[in-house]
Image (cartoon, rainbow, N blue to C red; front, side, top):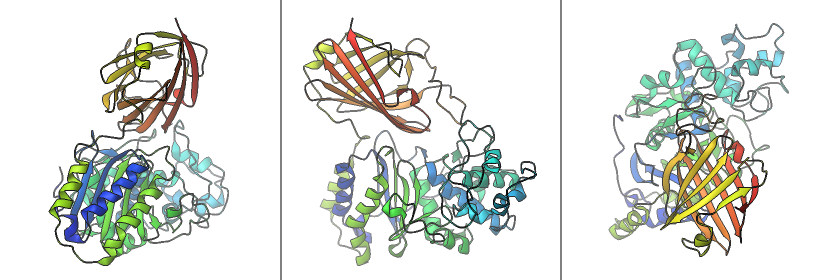
Length: 501
């Protein structure tokens, strides 16, 4: 359990109108971003905290590449203990893996190069199915000298997690438990998805609550210190969130073009952690402000940009004014009322259609298709429906709600209950779990012949499956689109057509 929580105050007490927060949230809603949480603190006070059901304050959330910042913290502490130097060559820690004819550019690569994303390779060296990710780094032919040019990759934090374990005998989260999580008041049962090699996947796998992420960011906002304890060496904490390398040439997001530190990004007003799907801790250091978000915005390439832009437009002007505001109970209550009982974003569309009666109960025989769906059937009752189908892994059913989410498991195997799709991973990359992924699903009728179904995966892995069905007389056509890393591959950009039997 957490050792402490930030004191709670009103937005007005720290100079932010409740109405400004409402406008910020409205901007995200207008972009139809599937948010899971938004938290705001200023001056050590939590002034806004909201979760979209089924998420809540106690639920751990996958942080994706924000995990890289956790790895950086561990490296900073390890260096502060004198157990490593940032200028140690990477090969020093892998005598059993370094080839005899190691390339000189690999031999020159240091921990500092890894922290700054200036390794001598173009992108991540390993594939998920590689049995040893460190081997892939040493055997990946380098493309340039290290330390010269920013090139984002996930091999760097993975190699640093390897180093942490080789030096300390502990995995990333185990090492941070007493040194960072406990003194920062974070949950001490934070954990991490494991690589196939058997160590914490510190490039993408950290599982913690949004409150944990807020406290993590506060440590770096306060130059490595929190609760009167110096958790990360001050000089390292300052450097980590500074511009140490230019990254403007390769930036695809304008807010990521302001430099990079030690596994932290810079934006025009400060710094932030960034994980796929908008797992963000966005700091405005001069204003002593942090906003934390969790979401699944895969498929929205500019989502993080929109979140930071919206903060800059709606919140920053009040932060810069620097003074508290008179309490406004009516506006604050209006904000709380507006966000109460919200659930994760539902599918667009109408709740009712004459098509339901025409389609319900029909079995469609499908022509050959890339998804290998042999047949499908729909049934509708009240404000919910079920899509049944058979593919290579069995007979499945996905239940959905019109205007609301329906929780379930993917895939719900009606023949071999509990048998997950063969490509999906659990707590270790490459190893399936003993259950299907938790999902919530909604639907909506569009036009005079369309049904949209939107399935959110809300498990240790996040992703979505969007299904577009078009009905005409006794025929059906499906387009399936997935936004997920390493799963839903069998449904990716799949078309299928069929006819009622």
